[in-house]
Length: 181
Image (cartoon, rainbow, N blue to C red; front, side, top):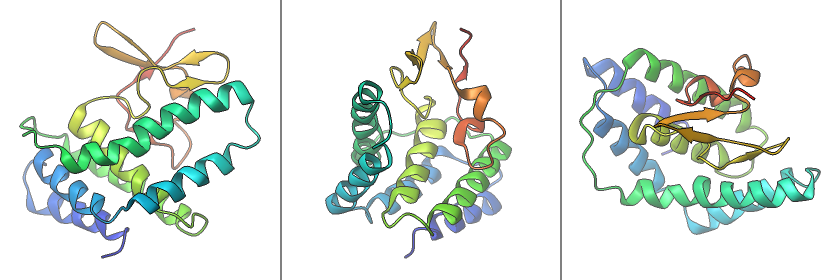
């Protein structure tokens, strides 16, 4: 089983179900979480540290803590999630999200030597379509002392609009709205 097969599995779900069930999505995500070892998580963590070496120190420390906890730590959450989810998933939004993530995976799999593209896909789909949370959790820092925020049950991101045109950005699928500042 290769990492990219996850997207084929999602295509099978989309073509075989009238509505896309979150439980079908979760089952596939769990299957691929099982292919991620602690060594894979350590390699991805090292890759994230290396890629942020030129980032401002104060921002780097804050952001890495959030990414390590919520990005890498959520793999365990997906794997152990025993909840049952009933609310049907918007099929067109899911198809678009899978296409975006597959495109990202195809582009990054040539440069990343780790399971980063797989983890990125798993966490993006899990937070968006299972948990109904923003991909970057509340409190995620961005340059300029800005953060992902929650107000009255709605999520706001300071960089959403700036990334909507980026072909592989997950901002298009994220449930957060643009933070006005």
